Length: 286
Image 1: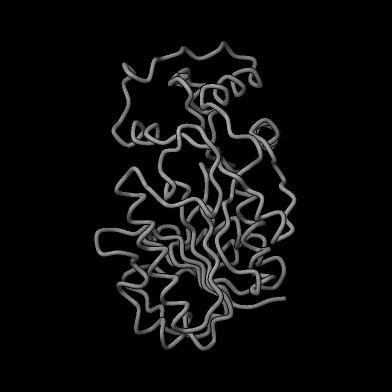
Image 2: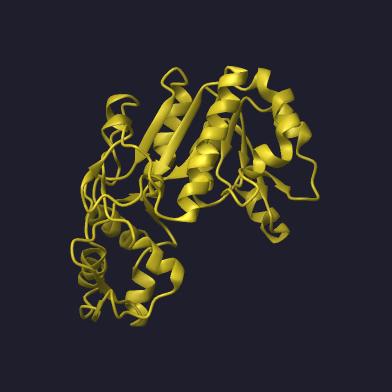
C-alpha cells in the first residue's frame, strides 16, 4: 500500500514515520516553520512546505492520508483553525486521518493504570487543549466520514532525545518524588504503530502508545549512567529541586498507561518494550 501523506507539523515523530513510508514508495509532504530545514527534509525524501509562506493547497488536495502533530494553542487546533475550508475540500480524497495527542489527557491517577476508556481529566492547560483538539478532530472526521485514529503518546525518547547527553555532561539529576511513575515510548515504536493504523484504516479509534514498563524517572537516569559506566547522578527531592515550571508540571501527573490496544487491534509487536532495551539500542547507534 502506498499513498500521499500530508504531515501537518512535521516534527520528530512524524519524521520517524516518514522514513518508514518513503522507503516503500510513499509521497510525503510535511509542513515546517523553519526554512533552514528545507534541505534536510528534501534529502530525506520529504517535500517541505514552509509556513506561512508556502502554499499547502496543492499538496493537501492531492493527499490520501493526513497526519496532524502540531500542538493546539489558545485558538484550538491550528490545522482546523486556519485551514478548515481547505480541509473540507480535501476530505473526499482522504482515506485516513491520524492525530498525535498525549497521555496527558488522562491527568493524574496516583500511579494507577489507565487505558483508552479512562475518563479524561487533564491536570494542565496543555492537556485540556489536547482534549479539545481531539474532540474537534472527532467531530470533523464524523462529519466527513473519514476514519480517525488518535494516538496518545507517552514520554518520547529516541535518537537525539535521551538521557545520555546530560549524564555524560554531569548535569543529570535523579528527581525523587514518592510514588511517581511515568510511561514512555521510543520514537521508532510510534512510527510503527502509526504505520500499522494507516494499513488498517478500518481499525480506527484511540490508541495509547507506550512501552510495557512504566517506571520512576530516577530509575531511567540511573540505568543510563550504568550503561555509560559513570557514577549515579545525584538525587534531588522533588519538593526542593530547582526545576523549570514546565518540568515541574510533568510531575503533577503519575500513572501507568496500558498499551493493550496497539497489540490486540493493530497487531503491533514493540521494538523496544521497555526503557532498558531502548536505551541499550540508543547507545549502540551512537
